[in-house]
Image 1 (cartoon, rainbow, N blue to C red):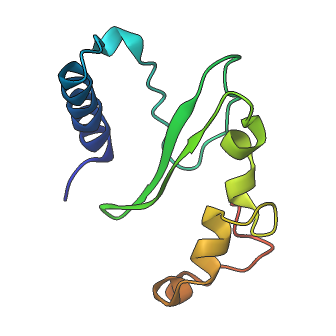
Image 2 (image 1 turned 180 degrees about the horizontal axis):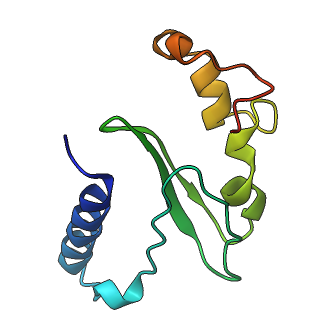
Length: 111
């Protein structure tokens, strides 16, 4: 099984390589990486920053998304509630037949 931290690190290195093809100079120092294992407390998106976030379970990415500089709610809370937005991790999990074994309910999905 692959480690999610390794997946992130490898993806950033690949992104830097592709940016070089477009004549954009990036290095690992240009990225802030905040690894958070579950359960975790969401942190605010720093002012003027954007984020790529992901949710990982049992060797698979459940959802990967992007939050822009004006999307703090998207980054900090919307994915934990099924009705907070059109596309959330919580809503996707509740609608996924494979997740029925986890006995998730709308009232506890954020946990």
